Length: 206
Image (cartoon, rainbow, N blue to C red; front, top):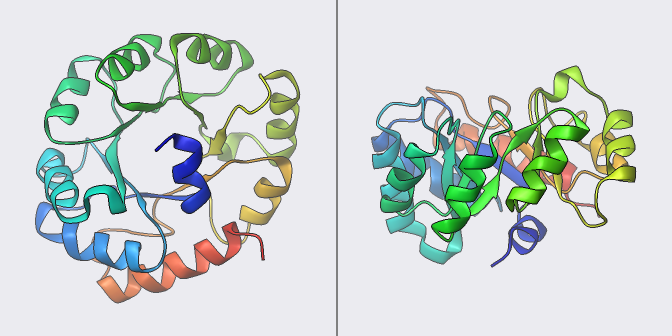
């Protein structure tokens, strides 16, 4: 599936920062049950590759599982070997994008300026992560989309919650990266299910 197809199914991307391998499957099950099927394990979480392996093994094609906070091309191969299917970065690094694409993975790199966005798209990025979204606004996203190639998928990340998703959606966001508003260490599966359902309800137009 393309990134567009995954986001059509699940516009909310769950950023599972701090998740432990033993939590990966139960939390993943709670998210998938709630309709959130794009799962990102930041590499600064405890044993992130084990969590990625566990979720890929459990969910297969039912979820898009990958790694976030990927800050160098060397880590891309490790994520690919663990079964990860998407690479997310906090910064604009075309080398990471090219490496991910060479391994047959989806690439969703971070950017903040138009120059960074165009460089990442030229490197082969499947979509772009506007980060930190707290320092931007829906108006900024709308202005960016006016100059980026038609169909460019931009996901705001940082400070995203059910309360502000509608404004970002109206500005043209293709999806939403959500961290502590969907999962934080210590959350139960029931906590995650409730938060995921609220976020998905805000993200999917009725």
